[in-house]
Amino acid sequence: MKRTLYLFIATFLTILGIGTGCTKKDGLTHITLAEVTHSIFYAPQYIALEKGYFKDEGLKVNVITTPGADKTMAALLSKEAQIGLMGPEASVYVYNGGEKDYAINFAQLTHKDGSFLLAREEMPNFSWNDVKGKTIIGGRKGGMPEMTLEYVLKKAGLEVGQNDPSKEVNVRTDVNFDVMAGVFTAGQSDFVTLFEPSASQVVRNGIGHIVASIGESSGEVPYTCYSSLKSYMEKNGAVLKAFTRAIQKGIEFMLESSMEEIVLALAPSFLSSDATEIENVVNNYQKIKVWNKDLALKKESYERLIEIITLAGELKEDAAPFDQIVNNAFVQ
Amino acid sequence: MKRKISSLADFKKEKRRKKGWILFTQISLLVLFLASWELLARLNVINAFLVSKPSDIWNLFFIYLKNGEIFRHMKVSLLETLYGLIIGTGLGIIIGVILWWFPTMSKVLDPFLVVLNALPKTALAPILIIWAGTGMKGIVVVAISLSIVITILSSYHAFISIDKEQIKMMKTLGANKWQILTKLVLPANVPNLINIIKINIGMAWVGVIVGEFLVSREGIGYLVVYGGQVFKLDLVMMGVFILGILALLMYLLLNGVEKYFRTYRYHGRRKKK
Image (cartoon, rainbow over all chains, first blue to last red):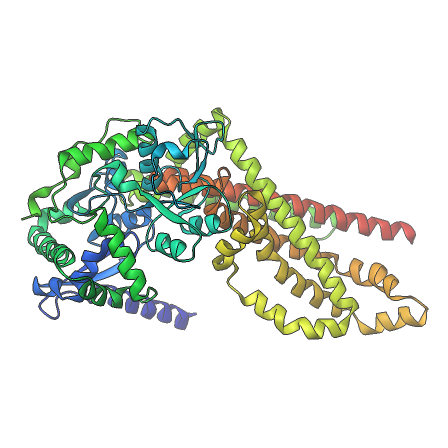
């Protein structure tokens, strides 16, 4: 009995020791970054890691993938991670939920929705009116991809039904993000919205064709941003500035380098994709100008984000004010 | 100090007393847990945004109860679970019987079954759903996939561990294989089969929730996914609570069936005497 107790205490202390023993041994500031998914959509970040831009700024960044904005936000709130990469709508929900130590966005990584609309046939002269009477697999209700799709459809003057074929266009919200490509491949529905690399994979297999970009049609939206808790931001301004500078360099590399250099730099972070796939994906994203040198989050694009969420019916209260959710002071 | 038990009435009284005490402890443990959760959340010791708190969950449950939404979600999940449970257990037991009937076949299939049982079924769920189709069918298939292999293995092992002497005696008395199965193997294994069903209740629920996470437009799993999407952690916790209560109800129902069956069998035998 006594022995079990000692064993228990020893194990506990060991775990505690592992948990606390990792700050500034090599003169670098260690931070943990929680990313919402591991995707070429966030290429500048992996460039910064691979090319040592973070190290140049005195940072050692440990990236953890926390699939889904809710898990990423949970990693931030539980202080497991100091910086989160996710859609700023998460911070809006948290702020409206009454959390006092909420997350504030300090740099914008992607300026547009990164999903594409795929059809079964090639449609060279596609317009949004072509989806009339059709079914689109659109992602989960309340998720940013689905809400942005709805926004685009409504802006095109279409009557949108969720899982309701009687409306002008039927958006299916029953299929989860990770099985959307599979369900479309299995022959269900006329259209599907997919992120990369699923979109390129489906195209390569000849099952679907990219006919439109949701991001291009919706206009500029702060789609994925870096955020940290208010309490962390107040004390670690220098760290966040250094972090933002490294990301800035990553974006410059993406915009100014040749495709070969980009593919070479990204390959170690995306081992399951071959060079052709990385090239296709980067091409698709550069075409719609997902990355932009300006990391500041503009008020007008924030307002578009709020409009999208409100139009989807997920925001009943007054939206969180721009200057509470966003702080552009760390972008130089 | 132990009380002296001198008569059957005393024994029954003591048994009742003990039963009451266990129930009392169970309820007070639950109340203590909920009260400390509420208290810690109110005192901001734990983050109420991340873990919610019982009063918020209750209020939300009341809203869902009032507009009747909750019954729709409960009905769908319950139906899927029942289908998964009945098909998974039934098919599993039938296959178990077939394996018992053909010993060579069971020897051939044994390694395959063991490997199948070790496969991470929840990780294969996305593929299963694409094969079986979206909607209720896919979810039920996931629920079946979780319970069927373990049902086959455990029912088969229960069937072959019947006393060889008893089988030999039935054979000497001229019984055929069908009679051995229906008069000896199956009746003797009813407690084992009820145990299998108990385990499968949990398996079927896990399967249904995993399935609903992937494709669904209603159900408890859908509520949990939606709550996560829009950061309503109260909704997530409410889903988890309802899940627990439904699983408990199914378990109690089965316990009742088991008890009824036992007393029925007991009385049945006594009458014959």
